[in-house]
Image 1 (cartoon, rainbow, N blue to C red):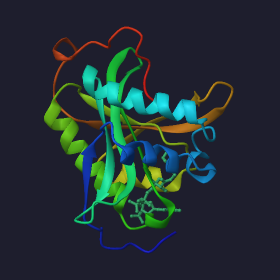
Image 2: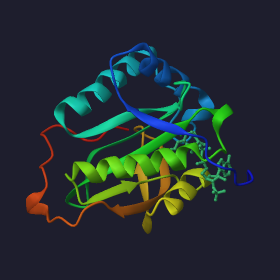
Image 3: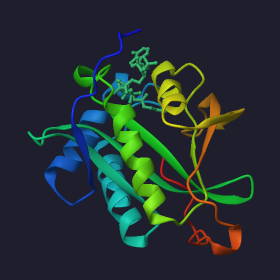
Length: 192
Ligand SMILES: CC(C)(COP(=O)(O)OP(=O)(O)OC[C@H]1O[C@@H](n2cnc3c(N)ncnc32)[C@H](O)[C@@H]1OP(=O)(O)O)[C@@H](O)C(=O)NCCC(=O)NCCS
């Protein structure tokens, strides 16, 4: 496991229809980056993913971001949150990625802290969930360090035919009841 280091300065930038964002998806598509997610996608699937990420913000069902080094502006990864249904309740789900050469410097942890602050400021959902595979040491460490509580272990199918045992981490964003939350738009079944 890498030694703890001082986090490098980063910011998170909302998803936009610009090359930097599509390039991020292409770089995230490497076999080692998608090992926990069912493997690489085709170029067509990536373009559809890009449009979906733009649509998430337009429809108000979440937000995707690129993680940017400050002050250079280089992309080093991505992070986001989106609506999903979980055990009969509408929640946000989050996920993250950092390019291999920038890993182990606290970037994903800091980006997740910024994302949590952002999701809190939106005030639309009570809970933010993360579902990292049980063997994804780094992602489980990020959850532990950014204020999530481990609530359960469950089996997930993603993509179709690929089964993963995942930890169920939950973080309370706001003390609001279901009646104050926005309902899930019809046909939206999540992002990843
Ligand atoms: C998961 C990922 C985003 C972590 O990014 P990162 O910027 O390296 O994470 P951080 O530097 O903030 O480290 C978070 C924790 O994980 C640990 N960690 C980082 N890389 C690790 C590795 N390869 N093995 C074990 N632990 C690791 C860090 O030491 C830190 O824990 P600590 O503070 O207790 O020491 C990155 O590895 C990645 O993009 N992986 C591929 C995609 C992926 O798995 N996405 C998540 C799907 S759930």
